[in-house]
Length: 476
Image (cartoon, rainbow, N blue to C red; front, side):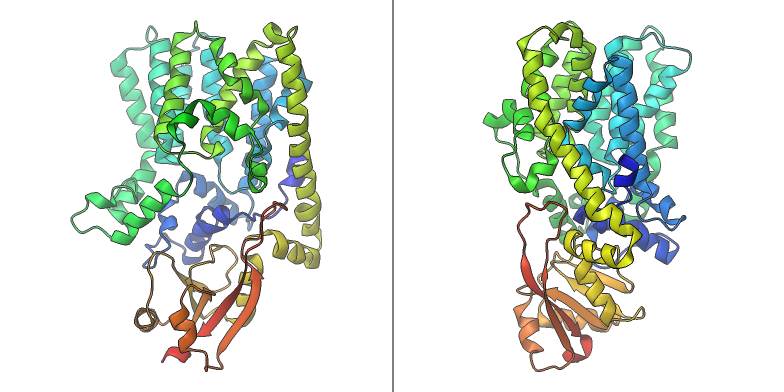
């Protein structure tokens, strides 16, 4: 079922931006090139996007989703080691609707979840280290840093916890040296790439420290930092519950398991395991202080809660607490399965019929219909300037520039057109009234009404607006 589900083309906005669009740009240019426009999310390409890049070698746009299936399968294997009741294991897994969303994404988050979950399980079970196992644990702890520097929130406390657990098996100097070598071999290349091309190893977040910083890059860094809601202090103890409650229909696909209603009781069960108990507390506090509020950032610590629950399942079985949890998980599991079967019906099965696939993608893939319309008008030799409102960069059959940080005047447009030999401009109604007004008498302007926010979630509200495609000759 998972494999059939992952036949579905990638359709979410983030994935079609840099997770897939970025590597497509590298593939098209046959090298990594610095962008001279405002596609600043291109800077975020890391080891995770390289998995998608290797898929392009096989002419597959959703090759990375195979790794998501493997990651889910491995989570089930870990669960089966901890608990022999496979029905409960599947119920726990399917009680996370978030998994159904991540499976169809080009974000390789579940691979990282596997790394941390294996470490958590070994620490929880207090397994005796086999020869060279510590080397594997360090790889699992440090490799995620090559996917995103923000994984330091997890990796550093875990790195300390591994040493504290196994300090009798290895000296700190040897542990530090081994860690350095692993960092140098795996995640270092991500930071080195950023430093060489952008002068900032964790671009765009150190842009402010440069002698002549790019203010637009700083604005982009702030946008990343503050783009989502930041939890208030009184919400801090309620975070697991907030992530598990269907408070907004448009975010129902990002729900976590109702197991987390009881997360504090579950974690309290391991209070005697002081290192693990402190580890969970530290990571949870760091996530809160980082300003991260989306459920996916907390997923790895939530998976640890499920592991603790499964390890201690015999303790709960005869209690009303256990029965209540099972009853609560059932509708969530039903939602997850509904999302999977809906995805198979609406996106996977249409892949076997081109006409049906295009019709389905027009309705459910972000900006797919818009890009197809632009593709039908422009030629591969055109250079299109996209200005606000269009995030997808994965289905264009032409070269493009992307601007979404600047407020461009008519003079700015003319300057960019002249400098880069832009042939077309694509923009959304209201993004530049000055430009639209200036070309109203030009017969080289196309416009069409679209839903600008197509998603797989049928509960998302539509955002209807006009897309203008303006020939640059109108401005000459």
